[in-house]
Image 1 (cartoon, one colour):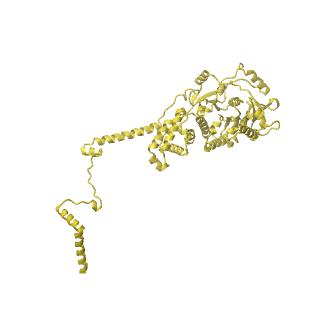
Image 2 (cartoon, rainbow, N blue to C red):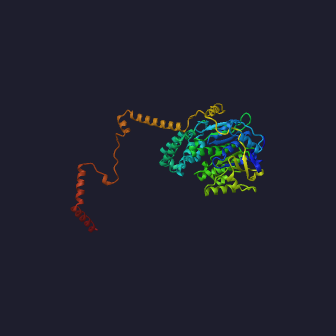
Image 3 (cartoon, rainbow, N blue to C red):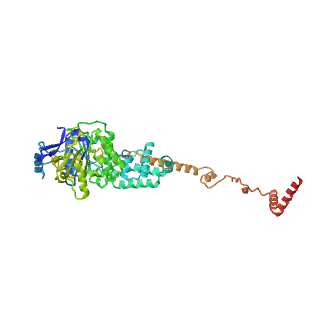
Length: 514
């Protein structure tokens, strides 16, 4: 086993080996090119090489073609002679057919072992991105996660989160005093988005048993790294779910793995196929998160390789982190295509033998323009390279063969049966049932009071209190007695014209007396 991956042959007659050093393989890479130019085969030969060196691999199989890694190539394949001829041309003397250790995974549990995580592990940031929430709705989601931590409400699956949001809506007036305004409309919008996610099959992603990262970083008995293939053909119908899951997986690796500095070879290699789905319509905060992880995860021994049609699909700040590059042909049919082609060519270290822009446009199927990191991490001179042929089967395996491999897998039975633990949904349901029971007991005890008047009072049908008079003299009415009647008559007379004359006479006599 050498300390390099043989990519193919370059130079005059394709006789100069083009290799990637394992020491710099964790400094990330890019595989780009138009549809049908050979990107999938390049990904396949890289996965084979990493596995042979004992490095585990995670890759997304968008078209189903990569399942052939589990089987060895055969001499009766229609391209057998072409493969042998290419191996001879590029000086690949050690070329032979072999299979690779593979574990199949599937978010929907149909073409592989189920892959699950909990709502709590996904976190509010990625979940808000998955649900495409507004700023106000994301704020309520953060409140939900905060309450789940404070009140010991485990958020494991979607029904846990849905139940907690219902509780938040019912107690919004109290919660608003502490956390800010909780709008019923925002809570309802989140619930609708969760319903859409559930209808798209996203409910299969959340739950237990949750995926253990150690199961993605295994080696077989021969010391070869396990190739973990995520079936993504159906997942592509929900691109937000696809992108969010892969980003979550990358974030989990970043948080869980220890620092290793610059190892002699990577601890794990991660291939992002259809990388443009990660960045289309993604908010800046999420793109910044990907850039941060790409910058820092290198020191944890993880290499990230983006596979996409055009380098322009990857944001510039992230593109600048990708040291190892394999550029298949780009087609320039429009002015924008020509601009992107020119920009792609300008990122390579020039080779005086040919024009990089012309080479990218002219390379054929199975050929690419390559540049690998060399000593001290310096980018190598760009070279036209004939990619080596794969050792495993080219093309997918049958559904029956996949089913047989799943039955004999080391992971068979570990994740296949879902687990529904006591979590937020059950806890909140118990609280509601207990509150309803206490209210029923209180009502029953009130209705069964021994005193009939007490029962009517408790039922709000009798009020025995005395009326409290107002402080105004107008509201006071004395009891109807003879004395009070005479007083009322005198007061009425004094209020009249005769009364006013009598009063004036009395007051005038008093003042005259003085």
